[in-house]
Length: 259
Image 1: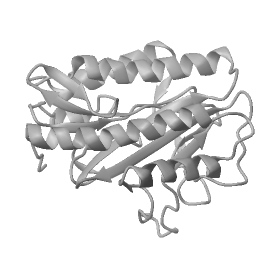
Image 2 (image 1 turned 90 degrees about the vertical axis):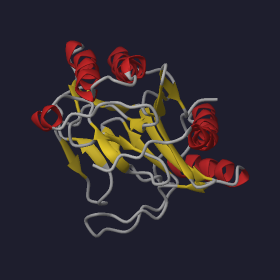
Image 3 (image 1 turned 120 degrees about the horizontal axis):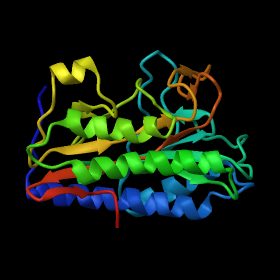
Image 4 (image 1 turned 60 degrees about the horizontal axis):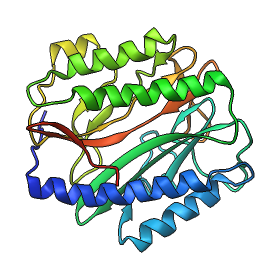
């Protein structure tokens, strides 16, 4: 792995990018109501991004399987969809849905990346619990990430939060380093694997990580839909996704995708 440690100046630049991400996600949280299309949410995100002078990271990303490039600024994944859902004028949010929105920008040469799962109107108790547990996994990572800590310990604590609640951690997708590119070393899983234990990551001051737990209400297995992008829980049960970009500091960690 070629892990880049960022200077304080670079961290401050990444906070500017993270601030744009935070602004967009807040605006989408206010706008995501029953009756709106996911395409309209994407238009809102693109407008706010443009006004901030930033570049949407996801738009135009090439598909690894040869499908069309990703056509939107945000990923909108509803209910059983885990990640990479494509916004559409045909997809209208309904009361009781949960919507995961993933979004990233580049500003002044540096990136920010975050995700949130939103309740559309009143949702059932199990969906509420799923969202709470997934957000708690992310909070756990933030609380325990500090220089000198091994990522396997952080990942184990995150995994315990999900599994003790009876949910499953999605293992097909992991978090990642981030800096001048959206995806950099290291890969940071939300669970403990043999590979992680064999090649553990010692957290160091200056590391910037995009930590993003994805949790399924049912089994962990996922499938990619026929559009070549959207990933859904194989058993059709709901999924939630939360993410922040964090910087490892001498005193713990700093969340860069908040205002």
